[in-house]
Image (cartoon, rainbow, N blue to C red):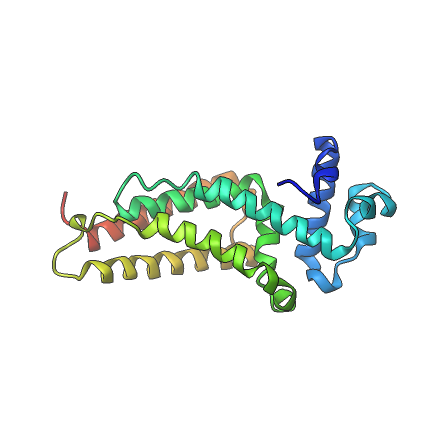
Amino acid sequence: MTGRFDLFHSLEEEKKTRIINAAMEEFAEKGFKRASTNSIVERAGISKGMLFYYFGSKEELFDFLFEYTMEFGKSHYLRNLSGETGDFLERCIKLTEIKRQVLSDFPLLGRFLESLYLPENQEHFKKYQKGADEIYEGVRKKLYDDLDYSLFREDIAPKNTVRYIKWLMDAYEADLMTRLKSGNLDAMDETAITNEWKRFYSFVEDLRKIFYKER
């Protein structure tokens, strides 16, 4: 990312990370309208003057965070989601593993991304919709283009098979997020997370038995 935020990028990494994390946490918790720059500078351990030296307004800071997350999405999702295999389930597994790694390594970024779609952020988010759609479309192409339909059972239309698998994958992910948000699954409990991954891979194998030809 270059241009109007070059001055901020000239800061040492530790200070940049503190400011980014503080801002993401505040916006994720409160949304754009209720987010406080006073809270951000307090979390980051910097002066308000310094924040506005690098970002002229709260909206400009939000602009930066959005650009930052879009660059992150391109580098982590688009570059790491390979289309080398035509096996749809294998692509779904890879996308899920990338999401898991992102949520594990960058939890604040994940929370900030989720917050963009909150009702209170919709009006402000409109100007970023095109960029978000471009990332989504890139991921969609990596997921769906040039699939090997010969792997699927022949008694179900291939495009229906893809649709059914995606519906079930989405339902699984929605259930997982519900359990995480309700506290029924502790993301910091390594044993629980390991067991959850075993459950996921078992689920994938069941999908393979239902929709794929016998190996």
